[in-house]
Length: 73
Image (cartoon, rainbow, N blue to C red; front, side, top):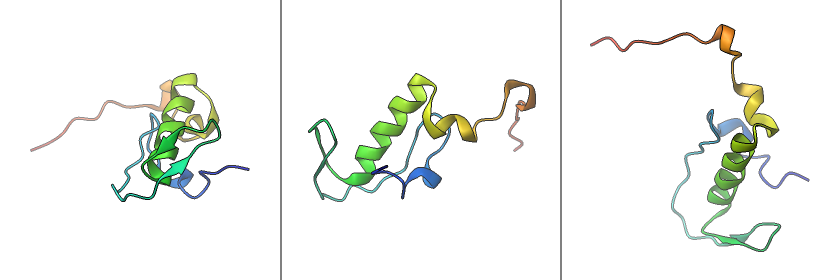
């Protein structure tokens, strides 16, 4: 079971997830307490991204398809 399934569609490349700062403490599978479920999932996604696994890779373009973007003012 994926405790973070509701947040998977919201994360960005690199495992970043924008969360509110509401105080609703939860514990992950290892027993570590987090301020809220979103922040727990953000940490989980970050670890997945660092390992190069999980669904983070699903949303990344292959290097051959990435383009350099320039901001125009």
